[in-house]
Amino acid sequence: MGIAIVIAAIIVLLLLITAVKMHPFVALILVSVGVGLAMGMPLVAPSPETPGIIDSIKAGLGNTLGFLAIVLALGTMLGKMMAESGGAERIAKTLIDRFGQKRVHWAMMVVAFLVGIPVFFQVGFVLLIPLVFTIAMETGISLVTIGIPLVAGLSVVHGLVPPHPAAMAAVGIFQADVGKTILYSIIVGLPTAIIAGPLYGKWIGSRMHKSVPAEIAEQLVQHKEARELPGFGNTLFTILLPVILMLIASIANVTLDQKSEAAKVLRFIGDPIVALLIATVYSFFSLGYARGFHRDAVLKFANDCLGPVANILLVIGAGGAFNKVLLDSGIGNQIAEVAKHSHLSPLLLGWGIAALIRVATGSATVSMMTAAGIVAPIAATMPGTNAELLVLATGAGSLILSHVNDSGFWMIKEYFGMTVKETLMTWTAMETIISVVAFIFVLLLNVVL
Image (cartoon, rainbow, N blue to C red; front, side):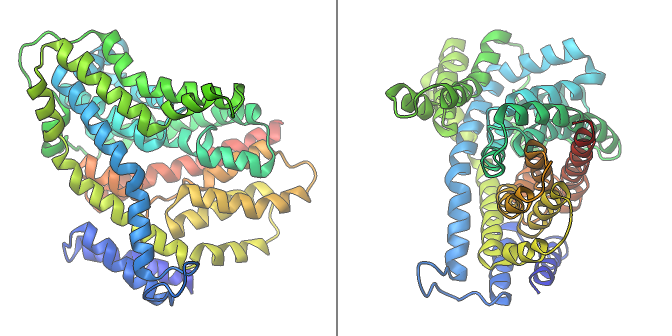
């Protein structure tokens, strides 16, 4: 019953956006209400433990934007400073010179994979998207060809590599070894990112030429004028500062006594929001005042760049509301119950359950956590199951088929200026390639080990 309602909701949502031409924000909220009614959720909460439809929508939108609104706002300001100072152009020119125009999409995948290790997907995306826009405008290459390797590198690391939250939690649930999990995740993740990123990106990019959306380009790409560009080292340090701070916090989590003041301070400055705040303020100096911009100019940059982000935030927030209604309605639990009674190998079970919950609810983190909770006790009864590979199989399943119930889907759609159909052909297809290819590599690694 639950699965049929999800399928019907997705079809209605696609029709509202494509045929009726309704704004995605309004369409997502309407469909969220419809799903809640169809699943028999109460209109208003009868008790704190039982959320009503409107409570789920508020909580989903609020929880999604609570983190993302700050990250996107700070990341956009940092991107604006890189654009106006010429920093994004400096890094783009350096990458084009080193890798060559024909191989610049490979450079984006490598950069995303490295930057993505200590940072959340959304943080890495807002840090690096100005580079993608600048390279696309410098070279005339399709935004898809350069953008898909970026999001592939970030997505692989987000789903498979500790210390990302879901992967780290799965390590704990399966009682896996962190060091081995990281090693295996890199062995599996790199070839997966290559296939889903530069290889698929070049193939689909040659069939779909997208230019940088004008409104966002206005904010995140430097206006052409003769000006000395900032140094490569200074710009690179500015963009990597949040990555460095988060990496230091991750190391502190492993090496320091968690009750010590040093550990608390490092955890605080390594939080994605604080790290981005520090980097954004630093960029006002390193790429603003030091480049001869007055305070009024820096303030204008910060103000101007936030307008185009408002629409993106609303759509992402509505995606979060839809996701929360699906979770609160119990659809994920229905899938989990069915999966419990199947007699499959733990690796296939972990991947399959995570994939089903991901398709139904749209959340990679929720699907990975739920699948790990279901599979762990089953795996414990089967001797010879590799716990580290179980983490990776579950992580791979949690990335499959990102579509209209995933806030990430809407973020990619809006930033890349694509239609829903184009986003399904690029982002959704790429996520599915990552999921399937990573699982195949996990099975091959299982044979070897």
